[in-house]
Image 1 (cartoon, rainbow, N blue to C red):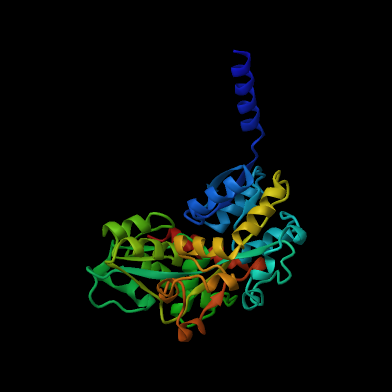
Image 2 (image 1 turned 90 degrees about the vertical axis):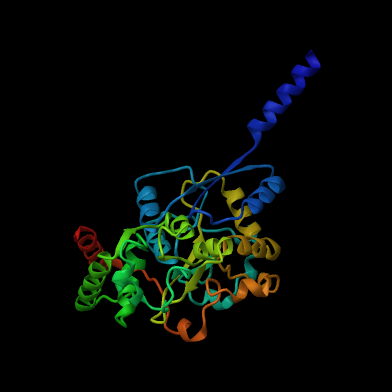
Length: 338
């Protein structure tokens, strides 16, 4: 009995000693198998909490939410978070895999020295259709004006993405500060709103899979995932150009497991792990040695690799500082419109 009690105490003590790493990220944004491998390698538990927009994530952290060790925001929001002192600097001595990040991608981000952020994925917002329901589709935002699709369309419930789509449809920069251009984009969105079922960030995947929706505006990796499961879905990259977002890994101030957070960043930068993770989630990780390990089928998917002519028209979402209030005003007007 004493031996049994001793063994039981040892098991309980070991369980109690197991550390927990808390991630705050987008849904379906890291392979479950990759998480299991990390847990086994480091003898820890990984707990994942999700957000559906940069704005909701920022609002939660700004309001004082604690307990997160590693967060995955988009670059423009990282600018805001860093300026407000919400992020820790990274210890490069604990990140030997940093050289795997593609220098071409680093040249496009703000934190080129990776002092407080490390690129995780490059993604963009695109369109997906049910090709069994739409026979004359075109790779254009003009699809949102089709009255025949009324009630069968969703637009991203994301201020910068949807206003950006409207701006690109008009030939304007998605980072414009021009009042007249933003007013025109507002009119476009209100017109599109008459045809959409709803603004949506998460349900569109299940909706287009079931054919509840015939046309959705969604994140490239999400569309990749649902297309892999349903051959009736096709991905279209609007010829007017799309928003490009670089999501990065950051450690927030107050994180309790900074050592494990660094270990997770470094783990995700391992070429084999990065390749496995990419093929599962459908987002391209800017990991140069990992690219050689990817299948040609994966790289050929339009959700992963943009055609050169369209890539030239794409833009990275930027932090607009005080002028972001102009976008908030447009978004509020669109949401209030009947």
